[in-house]
Image (cartoon, rainbow, N blue to C red; front, top):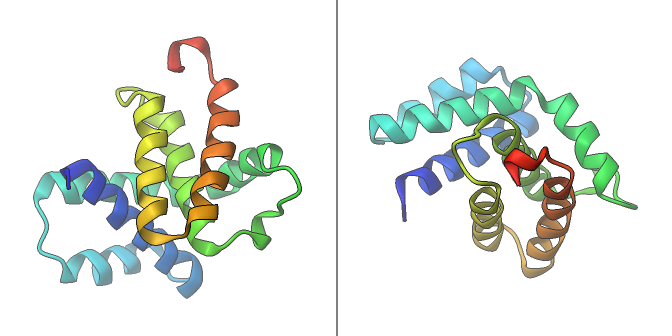
Amino acid sequence: MGSRRKARELALQMLFQWELGEHSTAHVISTFLGEKKTDAEVESFARALFEGTAAEVQDLDRLMSAQAEHWRIERMSAVDRNILRLALYELLHQPETPPAVVINEALEIARRFSDRDSVEFVNGVLDAIRKNLPTSRT
């Protein structure tokens, strides 16, 4: 597994812990990453994704709601919701990563942490959002 995928998976796990445990981002980072023996580059990218996603969760949720027809955010599984948040944050704030790569990574993570139906759902939402990105990002 590549180091960026590992970082995305760590960020997803921290988002899950943050949301369900209702802890501060600092607490989650210290308790979650403090236990892990990770490469500095992996940890740095994971932290950036986690902290950025957590800081913008309300805006990301609004964007998701607009694209996830007939699905309220609170009805989505916590794993799928956080995979989408993470990928959306990366699509919007990590221009060096091509959108197709972000979406593919989200699908691979959904395959690992969720189920087959979730992969299709995540793909549908992210693809709809990708189509509405500025031309320079598609």
